[in-house]
Length: 162
Image 1 (cartoon, rainbow, N blue to C red):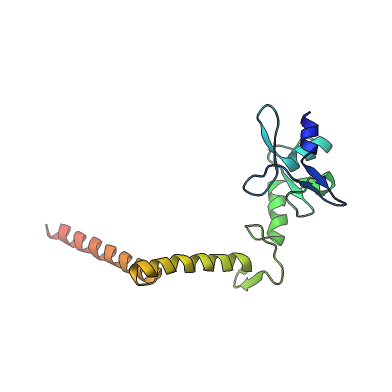
Image 2 (tube, rainbow, N blue to C red):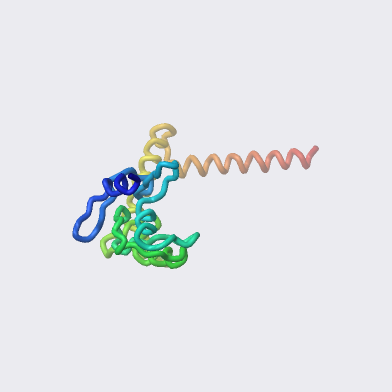
């Protein structure tokens, strides 16, 4: 019964086996057994076809498709090996480093998509701040910090006088 429920959520293609069931926030498939234990779909299928996952190890998708459950595309890696594998190819949010999506900087590289997103969020935040206070966030933040520092110094001077 458990197996048939699991297989009903898989769509097989020539290469990848796509998970069509419930997902967790990182977009990995998740599967619940009847005891109430929730496991990621790719880990369930890896253990079904291969062996038990060594505690602390990760399951790596060789096809780079995180909803794939094809056991041929899955391999067990130590956390360090898995991190190095992804560090080479992807930014910390999972975007692939391609020539179009890579910005070269002084000490390495950064993701163009993430940089644009960060800039967009900053502009939205700054626009609201300008609307509310009539000046950029950086300027008013700097003024507030300087004001606080002045108040602190004045308070210390008063304590020395007393």
